Image (cartoon, rainbow, N blue to C red; front, side, top):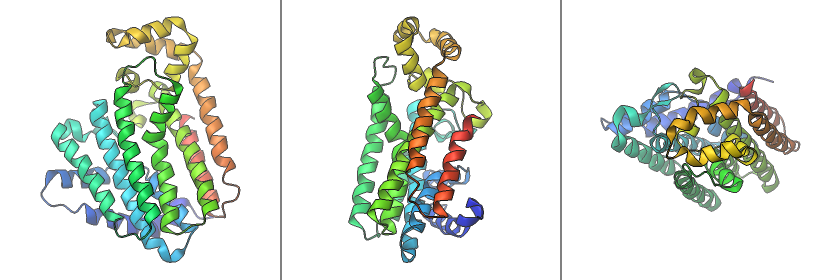
Length: 317
């Protein structure tokens, strides 16, 4: 089996052309900044998944799959720009964020431009369910950003609150990728539902691993400062697990909003506990559920999806 990169190379040439054409330099800073952000790289997981889903459907519909794939990458970029504003992040992929380089107004405008461009690219696809699913997803993504903001420094949030946040922050876009690729290529319902279940669980597993890496990862590899989620009041799975297991940690977490000097103490308690291992076990359960939904997917797509899942899980190793 050829490598995934080689298998999708002809597809990504067309997706890349669509994105670059939609973000052609115009002298307007937000437009030029959007192109600069695209050129900065990234794993391109979402367009990869939409193309793989599309490869299982009608080959005559691949042009629509490319539009969906380009649109998803732009949508993902828009959410990152807006996330950096909400999180007051200085770095993204090891580089200064648009927010810190150009300020609040230009960052908001750039994120909005990327979002509107993403929607425009798919506007001529003739599939009502594709557009309904896309619009609902954008609504959920925005509500997820608001939910994250509303729960900032909320030490009483539930696990349900946490899973709603990470679904809308991460898993939703991965689910959307396989569903839009499926709709664009007119894939059968059963295969699309299996891909959807795979994407949901791999997305949850991916975000939980991100939450663990915030405590254990290398800053150069992360592209952002360690412990930034906790410092910014975004309480992730390891934090919630220790909150419910340790009374002292729970009290310190309650006081953290008004006493930011407790940060190092909270970090030390987490690193000295077993909650990072517990979180990894939960991530692994989602990973295993994801893989179980690939049994009916035909090759070589099944093999490539398994490869993607394995690479995501191995980030901790």
